[in-house]
Image (cartoon, rainbow, N blue to C red):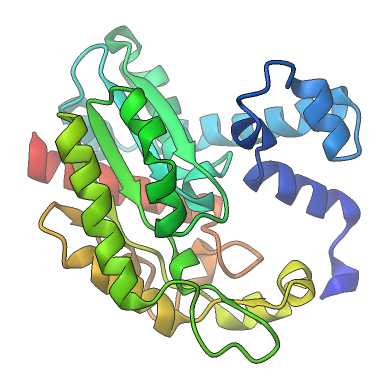
Length: 280
């Protein structure tokens, strides 16, 4: 598989999922030229790649809105004019073509007059423990809504013969309770969870970056994280069930872990339906 992946493909993969400007936000001099240099490219190439993702996101939004039933649900979404919606999670939120970025584009096309603001507070690689550590930044946004997408990172395993996930199932449950308490005690935001999706283990095991880093994800671990999310009292979108077991290959990207663009469209359909069901 290594020989079949070009340098350009890997570059686009990293730009899609890794955003140094978030980790370095405290430094006022950070800009596109510096970030492009981190990736070893010029700023024109960097912007070209990002614009490609933006174009695909807009096209995905247009395709979704061409479905009259979906468009009608978007009209019913209970985001008031001027509301701030924070999407919180890891790479499955941080992704330049994530469900959140498609939702942003959907509102720009369908409800521009409402001025709903979307904040992407996803950071690639985060576990629920990392998310507790940086949740104060979400509080500081003064959100009206929080969509919390817990990914499979709690179940991530490292090493040639890993014996445990990064975060135990018991600790994941405690972390989720802490996150929700954090939000409830310091904001009045409405909250909805999303579970991890199911995975394609064979693709993960064959992906060069995961091989090099001795990183592995297993459906068994992701199922435990999903179960912890579904135990919480707030509404939750069950993406684990949505993607199927084994995961539908059309919904998962070439690394076996992240949702494909089609997968993110499917996630957004489910999220919009559940938001209308529980809050409209």
